[in-house]
Length: 321
Image 1 (spheres, one colour):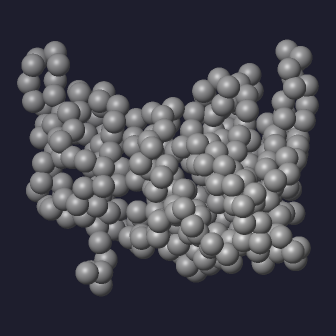
Image 2 (cartoon, helix red, strand yellow):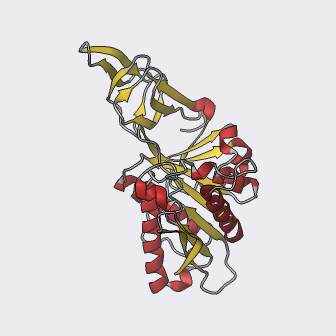
C-alpha cells in the first residue's frame, strides 16, 4: 500500500488541507485494469467513507497474505473534501461550494474549484474505471443503487450488474450533471459508476456490508483481484428506466408516519403511511402505493411539506420474472 498526497494547501486558519489516496499496485506490474473508488465529495455523506475504510482494510490484509492476488491496481480516495467532512456539511465551508459541481469552463479559480480539477486530473491519469460513492440527503434513505445517465448506459450497465446494488436507475441527461465528476469522467471515456446508498450523517452496517461485498465482486469480475475471498457473491440488481420509477409525494403538509420498509416489494394499493396534522389531531392523508414494485427510496425525516417526496417505487420490467 502506498499513501499519496494529491493536493495540499495551508488554509487561512493555518491548518493544512490535504487530499490523499491509498494505492495498491499489481504484483507483477502491467496492471490488468486500474479501478478508483472516490468518497467524501459531500461532507455529510459517510457511507462511502466507511466503505473505503473497509476496502482499504481488506486490501491491506490481502496484500500482506496473498500479494499475488493483485492483478491490477486499486486506488482509494476515502475523504476528498476533508473540510466539509470535518464540519459534517454537504458544502465546502467558508466558500459554500459543492465540490461535485465545480468542473467545466464556467467554474472559476476558487480553492474548491482548483481542488476539484486536480482531483479529476488524478482520476483521469490513474483510472480505467471509477466508482463515485454517495449517500442521500437528511430526508431520504436509499437502497444501494447505480444511477446512470442515458448517454452512457451501454458502457455502464454491464459494469453496474456486478456491484451488488439493488437497483440500476437509467435516467435522462440534465444540465445539473454537467459539472459533476461522474459526468465529466464518463465524457472523458473513463466509465464511472455513481453509487447512491443510505442517508447522510449516518452509517448503516447492513448497507455497508452489501456494498463492500459488491465492490470486491466487481474487482474480481474485472480481473483486478484474483480472489474474492471474504465477500459474498453479488446478486443481480433490478434495471429500471425513469418511466418505471414512480414518485409518491405528500398532498398535504404534516408529519409522515411511515408504514412501509425500505426494500419492501409492495402491491398497488398497499398502505405506505399517513400524513397527520398535529395541530388538529387528524389524519390529513392516507398514502397508498400507486403501483406494484420495489420501495427503493423512503422518507426518514417525518416533517413533510406539500409536495415533499415520500417514497420512490421501482416498477419491474414485464420481462422480468
